[in-house]
Image (tube, rainbow, N blue to C red; front, top):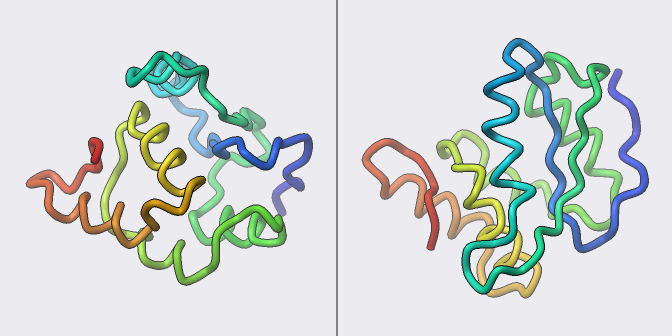
Length: 124
């Protein structure tokens, strides 16, 4: 059982750490998430959960835990992106900004990831 997500501003991207095996790798993921957005230098709006209680949680566990949050996107949107590839940490800002203003949805992100030879969403 994973803990509830609390203290998150409704406009923050939610980042949950589930792998605690490599602290150096985590720092490499977290640094670009917390850095100002490269386009315009905007401050990041992220809520990072770095709690070992989430260790080993599967994607379905995370989605189930955060689905109760009214600010989360629908199951259909999560499903559209699920299994569609990986995302570079710095690209989270692009995804979050576009979802926040309803410019694009998860299906657009999944399509962009599938279009990349390595299956990685890099940016729009």
